Length: 319
Image (cartoon, rainbow, N blue to C red):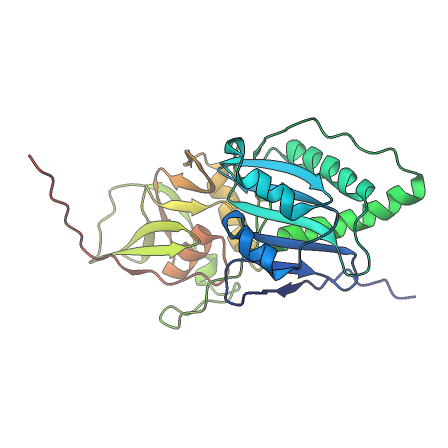
């Protein structure tokens, strides 16, 4: 008898269209559905009429997370949005049931307890608590059902961009986030991607290089709020100190890039940025074999954007 497939399918529905904002993630083989949106968009999300019934939810921002549960998520989230103690929250991730299989109170309470414990154990962000969640007393049959739904919910949360429950690839530090999987940046033909088995991809990465001559102009890279500066030096491309390194790693990233990123974080050459949890500050120059490899490692993405010339900017300070 053949082994069952472990492959999964996540369906992403964007009620408002576009590439950003409200998205609903589901899997036809699962009872769990995740609604993800910026908390500021709550009025528009409410008007869509898709978010109702029992749920557990995560409010996330600034290296902090709050996990709750409610039978009336829209009203409860509106209360949080007006609460100054939840002012850190920028994103909301709501785990609820699919059509015809709404979450009951025990599921919401159980998931609040599990998610809170999970994020505390991982240590990726600081957990903000109200009352301490308590796991419900469940029969064994119900608990096994919850186990299966919960596993699907964690995967859908990860696919929605809430990676704080997975330790894989987490950078050092108390508020370092874990990998999320936003879509890779669109391919730009000006800087073609080399295959992972390409000889250049096997080139060395030199951490902490110094006093390298700059050949011509400098370049910048922007991706998922990240900004980095780079320059060519001989046969190498150097990412300069002060650049930002994204802490999350997309699921499409190859093993060689993952290994380089792990090495970079282990080297102790990246520093936390106060108030930010999605990226770190590079404290030294790092040299790569190509611009493409430098972009992959910096962004944690297999298809990263191109480096573009850094325009000269003049700042005049008054006397």
